[in-house]
Length: 199
Image (cartoon, rainbow, N blue to C red):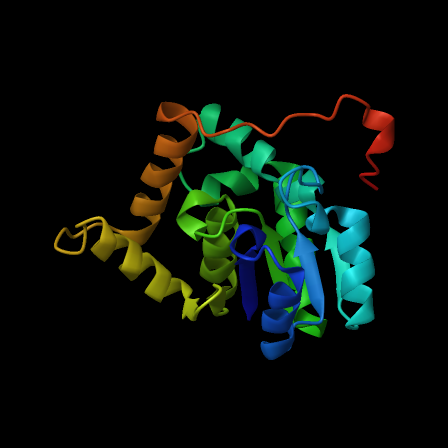
């Protein structure tokens, strides 16, 4: 099983931690490209690690393998399905690592966006579910949904539930829209790279 969460739904980090604990998460895997936030400094890597440590939750950064900027670049370069992402050796290694971690831990991947359909973690979690046949659970401030429930809710909210559209096709089209047409916000490098510890 794999959990996912977006921290922008939780200004109070205590509420974020509470839901991790309620779902028995013991490892939070950060898949942001850069592990910091100007808007939510409580989720900067150093601060987040310290907070998680107090609650006996481990933290691992995998943004160099599974980050949004990597996914965006791959999509802009022609990736048209979740499966195609595995042609990138770093992304594939990140997915392998994620799978190995779930064999021994209760893992939740984290990025910024509250809604998975606005976040590259949807690609990551969909591919994880497809390849491993493991269940994916999305954590929200007021509910949890399995991946299929999240996809069906999105279809209903966008009047797509009456259309016979394949889930992977829907997800792929969503990412084309986000990254090619709407030009989803790019994460930017900090001015001083030496202040950012990626490894």
